[in-house]
Length: 71
Image (cartoon, rainbow, N blue to C red; front, side):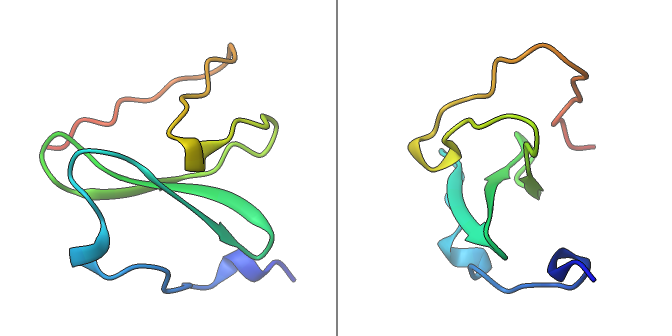
């Protein structure tokens, strides 16, 4: 069973900056944590792309895109 089926605390709300993404590893996977323009927290994984999220790099590979705007 995948370890990512469960919640994993990695940062407190105060530790998540508003101005830049933060990279973490959870169960051996690279995850980027960020805040939307409205301040809501978010998390993404790029399983087929090897972008180094912790360096703040964006994944520019072609593929589906989603909006990170908050309501």
